[in-house]
Image (cartoon, rainbow, N blue to C red):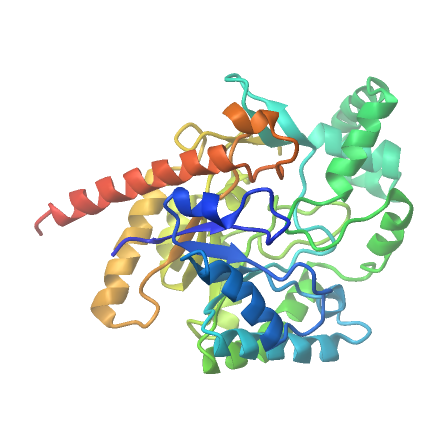
Length: 399
């Protein structure tokens, strides 16, 4: 059985429509109710409306990405218990509508971080990039976060000062918007004026406290998810290290170990994002996939080039530092095990994650960064071919 080929769609406002997605060969849609505020219940009526839009095109709503976790839950402040109850009800409603996989993250404040959304690669395509010097320049000299200077070595501070001094006003504004406005899928964006205040709300919350809050959240929601046939899939931190003085608790193999062991259930699973994990040179994606394959409920497959200093850029599928072949092989082997063991969740949904802006998409008036049509279609075609080749080579081996 092949992995389920899916595609992220941001709803009726997405510049890429469902008929175009169908032509890529994807059969499943990864989507969410972005118009519903964080913390509110997704009603059955709203779920059905969105589901009908998708199914009317001959596709299926395979994965929710994501049901956002309210910041109060992460901090265990304010009305966090009420927000957890709302989250449970949303999972119940999704399960009743036959939507079985939910991707989510537990990153404080920002769902992602990049410093450029339009980096020109050597082939003139445009890609996403993270430059730690540019990020330091933002923290130290634009945001002027208190205490940030203690977190950067002198060499980086000097490079960041030069980087900042070389920026013109438009470039400074672009850096601010890139870091604060959010990629599609980020449910909130921020202004520079209120961002420090939001960061301050996490004072006193270190990695241990945030991890305990995550474990409490999972102990509450996983039994509900399991009862209603929903598989949760936590997304790794992006990038997988602390930023802005905020803790990170889903960044490496030890973090995944703690998460899946805190509530023993196939509903307590992971999103294997090769790009987010792969940004960290300390993460071996093949080893991670092999170790946690039994809990992979969703997969994001892309590649990155990195240099070990925190710099990384999103690159072509077979040209980065991640062994995509090795990851795909482990996923195929896992599906075979699930079939042999009679698991109900045999088929793992995967999607091409991000894609370069290329060809005619460059001339379009609006395309979400990382979510162009042609770049992702190229990635999906490559993944499909890779999977078929590995599948046939495995079947040809006789033990």
